Image 1 (cartoon, rainbow, N blue to C red):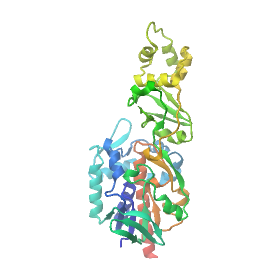
Image 2 (image 1 turned 30 degrees about the vertical axis):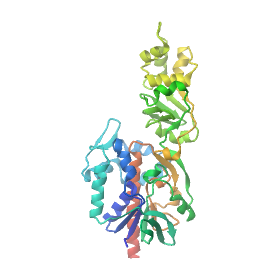
Image 3 (image 1 turned 45 degrees about the vertical axis):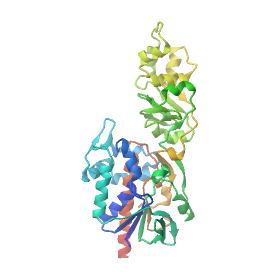
Image 4 (image 1 turned 180 degrees about the horizontal axis):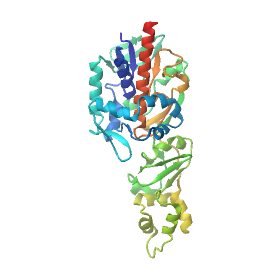
Length: 396
């Protein structure tokens, strides 16, 4: 029997296994799916965003209410360390104009293959199609292709993901056995999710069109980035940082001309437009795209004729919505195991020797490298503390 058991084969679980193996402990990794890293590979299809190249203070601030709890883990595995780790696996990286860091190969598969080769060379024991079903005393119970199995490791790291993208393995089914063990959980909530908007037929020609050069606000949160108009509403990286406020029902406001101050927008709108249509006037004077003009007509009518009032509407266009898309459509989730249920080493207070890592812990962050960095950092932290726990038990 291995010294340690890691349950979950995503980035957090693999990093926990890496830390334990590097500390000299034998590790069994159990994954419910037929292969590991499925969500990791899916995220890498459009270019794997590993982390963010920016000063550490603003980087930490992206984690919102979880900033203080995550600070030790992220300080121990900074964005620079993420790049060093990837390059240590033979995958060079580069930072784009927005600070997003990608492997030069722009794929997740080469990195994952190199990582698995490293782990297997250190002796990782992988068990696939092993679904964890809970505990019986000290034993971890699994449904496997060969029937029920029991493992009784000396330390366990749970890295079971959140509750979105169930087809890739993050189905949140682990919540039931944890709740049965008396561990109070925060409810799962969608994060980094699209927004549901009930469009009129006027918007149909614009489905799939991007909204570029705009800024978004919801409650105290603001973001600059792109979104896409879809048949069901809006989605995209520009909106995702606003998920916490939008979940609470905050209104969404869009600044369609964020590079121009209000006074300049008003002055340009006051210029004579002769026989031009208002749409053409907006395009020529403010550079509003077809999608932006459509959004203004959809959500801003009746448009005021006064340039000052119209400028205010363009700079703070309210988009009525009915909330975020459902949980399983979200890129990630909030909720799960609260930090209060964990000690400083991410060990469950109610189950000594059992640690948690990754998205199953109650934190959230926008896309753009923040999610993956925190998954890796908490996996490394949990794995190192599990190794220390094992070392302490061996010398006790």
